[in-house]
Image 1 (cartoon, rainbow, N blue to C red):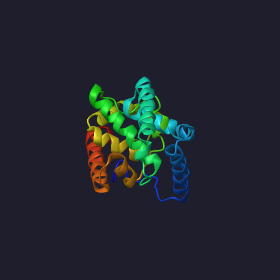
Image 2: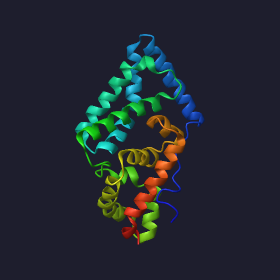
Image 3: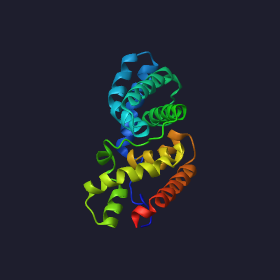
Image 4: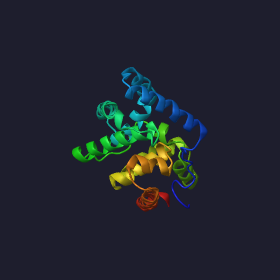
Length: 210
């Protein structure tokens, strides 16, 4: 097996549909910047669930997730005039949410990263499970249940930066470019962190994968 996630397809920001979506968002942002505060409501409605999902993946705590989701939108609204449209609003908002979540995790020293209440829903489409299911010759539902504890233990051993890259790429399906914008680093750094994280996960799970 060449890699745990080798064949996963990430969403690219150059897709025409994404470009059109970014234009709609930018128009709403400009209205907010011009003083139409109600124009921010459609952006909240549009991205609330997606933002909640990524924060929940990082905190595994519903109460913290609700607070951090609200905090991210408040921060985005208060700093809306700093958004110049250099990236998509979606990417800019993700960056705010990820930074708020990382700050919270570091401050509270939380160890859990993924929520395993909905692991089947979130990860069942991942190449990780496809590869593992084939490797151990078992059905996917049974594998998900067995994999929960093992994968959790492995992920907890990764640094927050490496965990974040994994969840943005594997669960949120962001491209390398989008992850770089969210995490304020180069695409090369993103690739390096992904490569290291995959190697570490393979190493941590090697006994399980035999």
